[in-house]
Image (cartoon, rainbow, N blue to C red; front, side):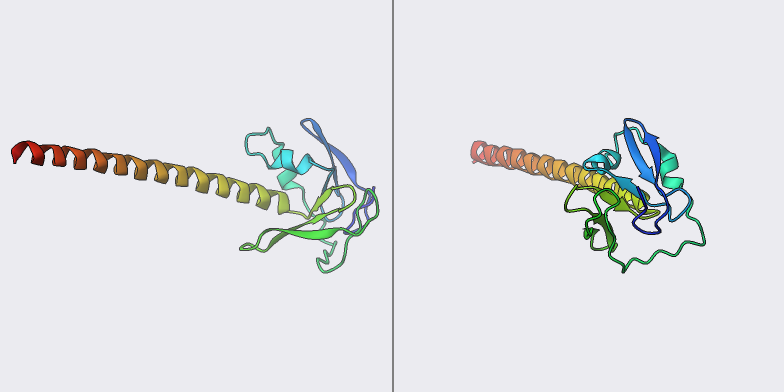
Length: 152
C-alpha cells in the first residue's frame, strides 16, 4: 500500500495481535484497518511504545489541507474531529472504515483517552463523596429530629 500523505510504500508492523502499516521512511503516519485503532486506544491494552516514537523524515512536507485517498481502497477519506478543544482530527475511510493517523497523532489520541479516563475517575470520586455527605446529612437530620421529639 502507498502512503496517502507522501506516497511512500507502507511497511507492515506487528503490534501485539495487530498488523499495522507504517510510513517508516516518509511522513511516519500509521494506517489502521477497521477497528484496529480502537484496540490501540484502550489504555489497558498492551501497546508497543515504539509506535509512538516513529521518526518522520525531515524532508517530507505534510499538507493537511490536501484530501487524502485511502491506501486500501483509493476512496477519498474524510476528516473526523476527535477533540474540538485540541483541534485534533484523523482521516477516516467511509468505504473500508480504516483510519490514518499522522505522525504524533496516536500519542495525542492516547493522551486524550488517558485524560478522559482520569476525568471520569475523578468525577466518580466526587459523586461518591457528595452521596456520602448527603447520606451523612440525612442521618444527622434524622437524629436531630429524633432528639428534638424526645426532648420536647
